[in-house]
Length: 497
View 1 (spheres, rainbow, N blue to C red):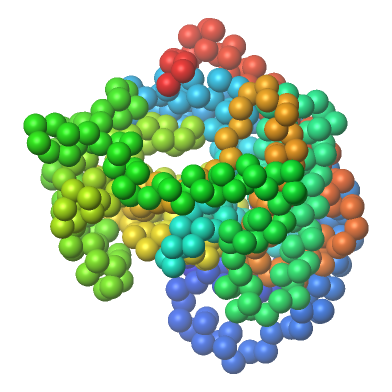
View 2 (cartoon, rainbow, N blue to C red):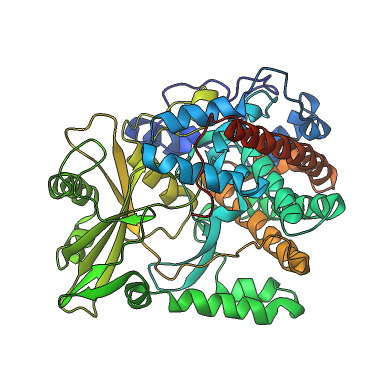
């Protein structure tokens, strides 16, 4: 991603001058800019922290607590219906059902709504490569290239340069809603939101004093997770880690395939998993797949191409995933190696413009949205999938994809409605997420500037936890509005899928 506009992010009031270096300047394909930076001395960490601290004069941290939607400024149902209009219509009821299941599900699927709300807030003007959809459900365990388990952000569909505090506000809000979802009250919600931000502040300060390569190579690995886990949660944490380690390609094959007339085939589960003959635009699957994979292979490095060419595509199905992504093209490819016991599963997922893009002045030069997702993941995740790549589907203007492995040693915490006994587990989890977000921002932005603004006191955690409670109430209200729209027949709904 390379910036072509150096304006301040956000449509709301800016909090003073820009503070270089910023995400758009780091995340670049402009060789001249890289060369220029190599020969220009950067400001010391202490000076950059002072710049961040100075931003508090134009945007006091207490102001980050504020949220009030101006009547008529954001219509959540209209935003959701506009997204639905360009998706696979047969799957729209599934998306609506998943969003209507609970306010927690609604928030997960309404990143575009929250982006519109955040755009009305004043910002610090300090950018990172923002996740764009910083929901608790978008973190998890996965395998590094060295086959070690690491914990980090694992969803990058909305990745885009944007204000660092937008990610933090969305994460804190999702933590508050999660607390209520599992049976907590407003006090519990405020606590988990506060702890999310407090841990972010703690670690952004740590990263601000680390060397560049030390930060880049930092990981939250299995040993780190167990070291910070409270004693009473170590047993359940070890079980979660063990389940993730067991979820390799062999276990995925056992779960997703069966034998049909002597051949291993992916299992259908209509309408969630369907073996289609044509894409939604009428292109035969074999033809579309051939075109897309040609472009995808071209996006890989030589060593990855050499590895991939040893496999052959044995089957492909369309699969519904997530909440916000329901209705976008998503295909699962089952590839075979030398034997049936040597499988590889790839997910081909449609990528569209980030929900942040309409609300920031920063633009990226990459015209392929799949390339945007992959580039963002490589910067902020640190241990990306070895098969990560992208490819447009030739002959279908505007339809772009990215590719990654499916279910390779992946795991995440599942939230169960009404299980108040899991509040302690949630509290530990949000602290881990706050740390992971700080690492992502340290990799893609300037942690010294952010740390300078955050400070070390409880001022920022207190402010954003108050925002989280306000946005939690907003989420409940928006969820009710979607339910009312469904009762009026404005949106089709299929529950329980």
